[in-house]
Image (cartoon, rainbow, N blue to C red):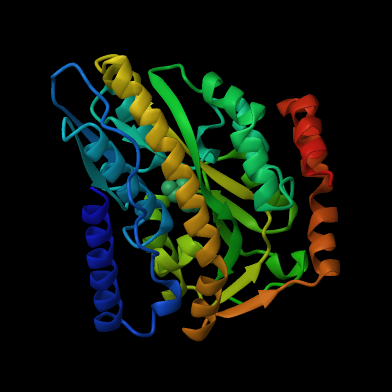
Length: 353
Ligand code: EAX
């Protein structure tokens, strides 16, 4: 058993090395790390076979999809092949909101949208839209993996959905096609696509831009055709969606931290034996930890790669960040009461060193 494991590892290592050296040399810094080995024992089911379609909005080359590949590996191996996982990327089975509706209808089994388009359904998710609330990924982890995140998953397990874990899209950055942006004044008149979320609309309106909500699936074409001038997403999502091909400018604003919430169709969930429900929860936890690690490890390398490919990236000074924060203070105060000040206080308490 031990020898077998060793042999397998070595072979995998050699194959990975070969793949890297024969593939693209220029992308080495941002190549996905190899998938971790699956550990854990086989989980006994009820003898039935299940097929699970898991669809996401981002593309095949992002960290999110890499996480899904790990999820598939875990679930298929640990169910001894009784659960088959089929992966769909790039909103092939619908954008964030359409995929959630499909889960409710029982025509799709899993998805992992950004929390932002779901705030009408789950108002507490709006904390993830408040500007500059999460000072570091470590604070985000404490919130997502602690009591608050657990409570939010419970509260989001309704309306035909079961929420079983957190991954991340990450810290959002601005891109545009018109000019470099380093102050809110530079945004005047810029048409910025936002997620379908009232706080994001408020943020960009308050900064002086001309925001318009749109699904992620329509975004590349809208940027390419100049329907909008800019958008905002984490570096990894900007790169994996090739937005830099149509957006020469970017600003490292880090204005919002966006998680992905892992959702299962309740109709599918209820068909599964309890042991397989537990397996999905464990696999979602491992996927979330792995995906966040990949996303963070690649973040800076991807920013550098975007620069190398010709994107003009503005990095803000502390003072410039403060100007954005001060301008957005009214948005923060206004939404604070609507969302619930106590929850925000709890998150801020976690942020204190
Ligand atoms: O599924 O809409 C967006 O900007 C997000 O990146 C999208 O939720 C990814």
